[in-house]
Length: 345
Image 1 (cartoon, helix red, strand yellow):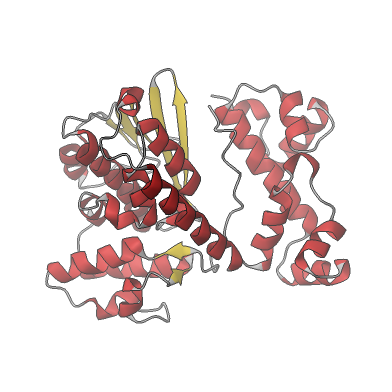
Image 2 (cartoon, helix red, strand yellow):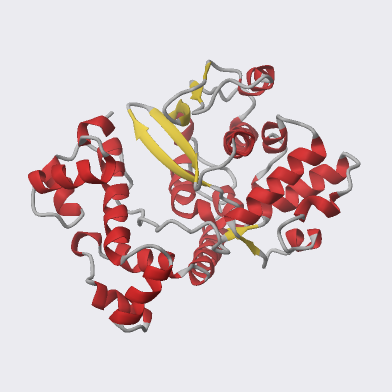
């Protein structure tokens, strides 16, 4: 099931300063409590460690990658992602946490999380899908990472999610299944002790599944005024992140404003305050082009519809601005090397 009200968001480039520091402030404090010297936590980032405690700091994905590598080195704890995630509470998510805590029900909280999860520290692309009484949360790092860092990001995503669910709904919250898109680690016991559910590794995706019965629970802390204010702050932070995008990301934002009728390169250039010639030249220096960015977005949107909906190929073709299913099939095979049926669940 796709939330049709949730706007598609263009991906950020690795160097875009787009990631809030909440998680890394928590990580710094966690390492300090362990008696470790955290001044080297920001080595190779161009930042002082103190910058992680300032909520106005925005990090690039590559800076985050360096911080995680430093933390794993300092802690010598391969299960650091789980051990950090299990410490988290909603307040560690900043305004997103306040919005979720003030929501009316689990369903309301899910909608807020799916719209605004990037307002907190987010190193992943996260999808929320509800089908047949089950909520599936899928996590994938936004950019490729070395295995140890990939594990950290996924572990922290799922451990913090489950920790918050248990703090809200009780320790008896059960995960139905959980799978990971990487090989089983040597510290599997840490997974078993915390997640307390069937585990699988080397899966196609990393995904945590729980019953949607939890989402029916009404929140005693519901406060519509606090919720509304917190959501506005989240929206403002997302706008601030958008302002820090690279040229490639800015083009993606413009393209995604109307995916059924993508703007021409001249229209994109106009919205960015550039001439068409200048835009073409600047994209060429970045080893890409308008056509490449357009086709990549079409591919990503199409894969999402194939995985998460029962729309026909003709319907998906129309949604990404192609004429019919035949055109879509040919283009999709060219983009991915696979037939659309490969992505159907």
